[in-house]
Length: 305
Image (cartoon, rainbow, N blue to C red; front, top):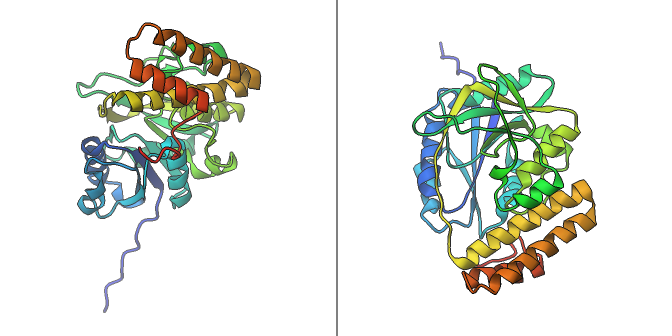
């Protein structure tokens, strides 16, 4: 009598990781996912944004991982949209390369999302290497708050987490680990590509609130957040900040009208111009000003990246 073949478990979650020159962190992230007991229910997708640091060998080291290689830096928004269109599972885990998910946590997140009809997305609690909590609950910013924190979305207003509460409702996640239904992303016609590499997570949180739904932080489900990356040279820093300004301008324009968004960009350009008079970090400031004037963002247009 022939043995019956055991039916393979169906895919529950597509884990989508966008990475650029983050090979060590990416390896740790993938090792944590590959060693998870719920690995068979996951599809793991890596969208490589034109890396030049050895990330090209990732699919050889992790043959069960699907790697989509982009020729240069397309930015987070476009790269995620490419990955989302490729994803096969009902749920998407948008995961930063710096995050190492705890064993079994990916499936648990999907189960919690199914059990919470009032939510559109769920997040794990992230801790550092010492086990200290790094996840923060934040509220969606006003246009003026965006104008003040445009270089660093992590500087947006935080609210106190309620200790001992599971789950915790929050308006704004930190963008490092978010599980959401693929149908939700498709329902908003994918991620808004007016954003490049920055502020798209704030935009997505805004769309969730606009739908009258919540993002839930699940403290009983955890992951570890590490660090990777550096400041880069003056030219790259200028492009990063131009992209941040463009994203902040798009968000402000949606909240307060086109003129408010345009006025913000003019203000940033004027502040940059005045800063050039100090002759400090002149290469960066000159590069930022020229990119601001050209309306540049990280979206694949600059093929040098």
